[in-house]
Length: 398
Ligand code: ATP
Ligand code: MG
Image (tube, rainbow, N blue to C red; front, side):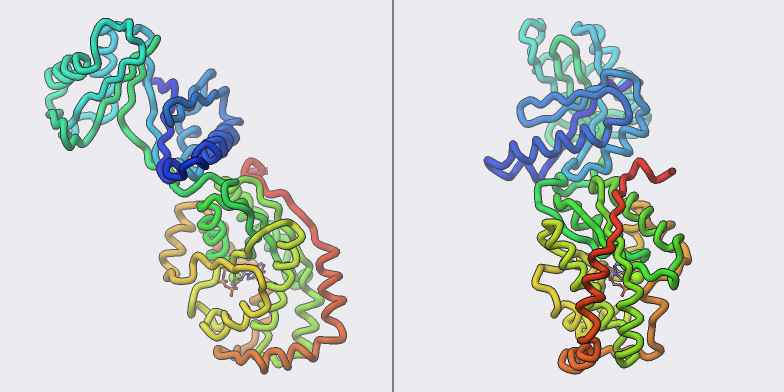
């Protein structure tokens, strides 16, 4: 059966009072952008509802896959259109449609008709009961329950007739662009892409920063991070990825600071540079993939030490999650397979055998003083030589 349109259901943005129109505008813009490459579509808005209508051929699976990536959508109802607004035609289409949607599954249902075209000779209540009867007669798996039906057949009579019933689950959240922008510290691991996805789901635009350590890390490790940014951008929209050459800073730390403190000091400089980039690019917060206790650098003491360098809020949406929970999300958003590719990371190369798990801030700060004659210049150099890649989902296969 051909779906001519999709009814877009959205929940949370419906509750935002006057801002509702702003949210709807952003949502419509996001929907348009997501399906732009898949065919000709127009958006029709009426009575707080959004219809995406196809004006050309399109691939159904592709459009659904894309709509499922638009934050702010809670449900997608494929709509079939009956061109003839006549009872006979509606009847036939309704039976065929319900059969296609639900097969032989035993379900309770009700019909919910709405007559926008008042010249149609039957009232909504009549349509409900007549079509209800037809369905009962033709589909023995269905029984009526007008109070708590499993499924509803919606029939909207206009110049044409719109039928829709099944709802495909959407991503939820808020449309990207309704809640500012944040800088994601994106490594090649499993956690940080998930963290970016989760914050973006709350309507936040993303930029990202990756700390690269050539020649200790390879071009392939960098490409992996670009690919991860591209996958996440399928949800969040284009991500400007700032690639920082971190080698000289790491070497200086390695040379001058106690080895068991390497990771924590390195993480502090990462956060400092990320914050500088975030400020420069008008971001309001940082995002990391940290999770309490996952590794030595993520104990409560370590997190407190790392956090101390930042003035901006640092969002860590994975903070209370077990690894498996993070993995489950990474599989759902399709970053997992890329994240587990075995390329070296700057953190894994300069790593101590016995890192401190309970760093003391004063001691760390004293160790950092050993860098005082070089670090300002090295940080400036790192910031000046940033390479920016615009990560877009459509470039993934290239
Ligand atoms: P991930 O799976 O996200 O790499 P992880 O479990 O490997 O996390 P760490 O290596 O301790 O944990 O990193 C913690 C967080 O610091 C990461 O989630 C990420 O936000 C940030 N981070 C670590 N390495 C880098 C890097 N090379 N570039 C940018 N951010 C990084
Ligand atoms: Mg990592």
